[in-house]
Image 1 (tube, rainbow, N blue to C red):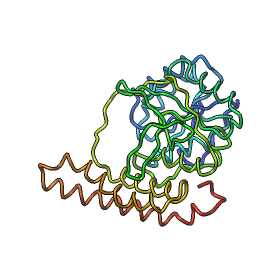
Image 2: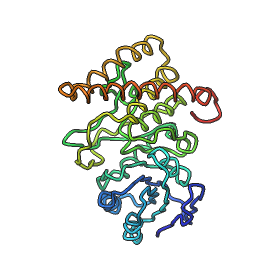
Image 3: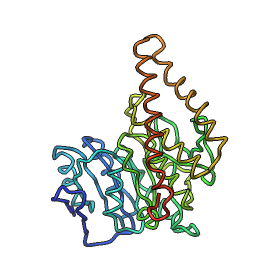
Image 4: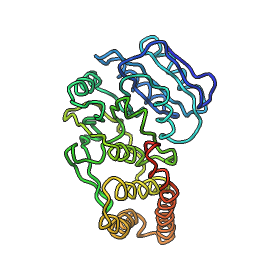
Length: 312
């Protein structure tokens, strides 16, 4: 079955006839081959009580055609949205979800056939389960992902889920009580740190993280360019400020972030430009601009964060 948002409007709400235990939410844009592999993995799941919500940011019709190809084996809600940003896409997914749990995955993540079964089994066995966000290991370039604890110096280290700040957003199992009440921050148009901020907001409102220490999925091995993105660095500064002001308030950690954290990330990212003075100058300017913009956004949003009624 394929339910289509034919209005091409973000305000249109899809109403599938049947409610499922789980909805799998996938934001995608111009990656039909990866999406096809992703849907093939979903078709092979041993757990069957789920539907799929796809938000397509592509201008063409190729993504919709892929959805039609799978409509006889998967129940798909297809939503067209040309607004920028994965955060906006995930917000749309949550708004159109009616299931008990929402499983966010990326279009380049391929679930093992027992993945959803394991996630649902963990969820059912947890006390106060509607207060937990669940994930597990994803294989990426031969490495296995782990929960991460952020440091005020700007880095992070593996930590138990009970003490971690986030895990990779490529696979997040979120109960209805959370996905309906905690919004994604639409300021984060560029890729990077949007999932970290979301999980920190959830933690601030009492949510806990649960980790399945076994392989659940495989990430596509296509490497992304590891260069400074103004958007990503803006998101980083904003997210780290949120953590040290609202989640784990600490003047010492905040001062460490503004000094050591700023210089650490500047030094690490500038190494690639040491032998190109013009590029180095441009990089330093871009980095300082990103850092300042993240702070400005955060200051503008302070009143939103302080209000208890908006879930932020």
